[in-house]
Length: 411
Image 1 (cartoon, one colour):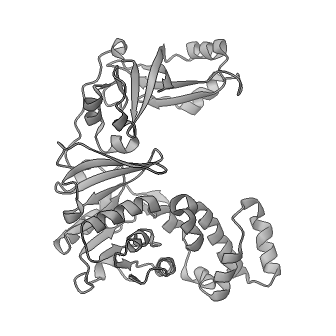
Image 2 (cartoon, rainbow, N blue to C red; image 1 turned 180 degrees about the horizontal axis):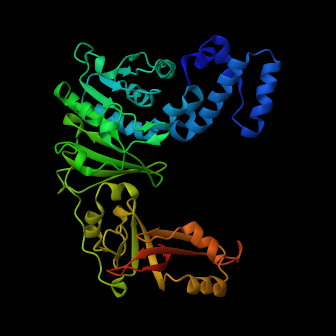
Image 3 (cartoon, rainbow, N blue to C red; image 1 turned 30 degrees about the vertical axis):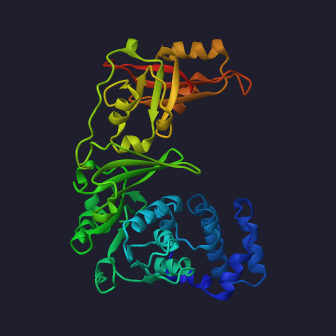
């Protein structure tokens, strides 16, 4: 999406047309476009308006009702931070008592909106002209937010009165993810070098980034929303409110919970591994499934210690134990009661499905080369909606190479 395609919207007529459109409905998009063109609207304006209508519908999951007043590009929306997560970022800057934040590579302005929403002055910098234009529109409600179309590293931070930085390097090229931080735009090392100018530096990074890439004196936090890991952040200087180390932030619909191992003070260190059980006979009454942010943060061993549990196998992020899950840890672990332990053998599993008349079959897996959807298709549960339902966890247990199927029920 370039400046030319956006231009029709950045007029009173374009903005009015966009505001008049009904909620996006893919089934009616073609007929709506034809109707708008028959009313005399130019094809360029109709195309731009319908594109924004579609993007706004997709953006609702990230920005909520605010999406209906914003403008987007496909790439900008893809990389934009969810508003709920950006709000936690902004609160970190507020608690660090910074005066002005530079949002370098601001994209469509999601982070800047959260910062400005807390009355923090923001300098939003974006080198892509079309994206900067969208950020300008999106930040119009905030008089203390300024958008500059420039290269992020060409801005004189000191002259701009900036004492804190947030950066979200581009990690996609040609629709593909870039895993090497040296290939990000800008490279992670270049962003971290800004600490020589501004001590308060925050960077959004890929959640799968190797821990060894983190500065030893920063705080690294992984974030999950509704069970999905959405990002990791590096917080340096005054923004490392917890001190150096690693943590997991688990966000629910109306909740936020943080897990941190106070003994971990070096985020670049290799996460410790708890000792797994030796054999299936050592399985406890319960199976615990850590949240993805906990796993990425390397805090599974910390949870094992706090729950008096052990991994079911080497490098397997399922824990087992006989003690019930403490209430304060429920945001970080899904607890299951183990009902049966079955061999991971297709013929015997088919026989079970047939004998019990199973209808719904939920299958989870870790550490075994089995595709749950393919296995479910092979088992052909035919009990329908009225048939019994089961949840199976396919995994390796102890030192055994072959996997097992654990029949579990939620606690």
